[in-house]
Length: 296
Image (cartoon, rainbow, N blue to C red; front, side, top):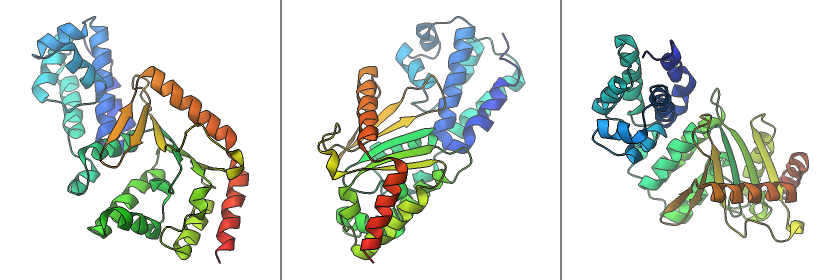
């Protein structure tokens, strides 16, 4: 069997700009299609690379790095014998195994957050609810500096601020994700860094809320209680249909990644209810502008 002409080559153009995590997801999806075309079970594929069906599942979901020896053996098992096709996919594997831009900050990052950065960079859409702070992707430099000072006592502040700025570049990237943020009204009043920093931050939110790929809603006090019960969370969705959405919950010293269907459905429902309770985007923009004006 020979892989569908040109299909492997298109993987790179579709995913490379979204970083190595996205490329790993795309390559994994291609491996799954090749296996299914060859009518080979995950169990049989696992045995061929001295592993298990669970390892094949992780490879196909892009949740682990690739060993070239394993990929060569799988391509042989799947009947991909054309030298050009094999080398095309193996070259993509090498690129997928390269560290992301955030690797240079690994001394600042716990492993669980490095995982999140890769997924965030690979995502097609981001939905987030924040009850305490402006979401990281929307923070100004000075607001970020003040947030960093709260938790890290100004250690490596400049690099942490730079890391946050690099994250924000995905909103300017061609083909980057959409961002839909619901923020509690208390965020508009909490003077992180002082009133001048907060005012500049609110003005920035007003500006970015007009971008075509950014939606911001404010959940007002008048809404009363809300379905999130004080818990901030983020939902990531990916272009690859075989990869499920992921809910990310950050804690002080760890994080949770939820992808079970019942968990995803619950958080989708919560996010939908929050979006209904919150002010519409145009009204939210006016609220943010009014609060910024009060701080002058």
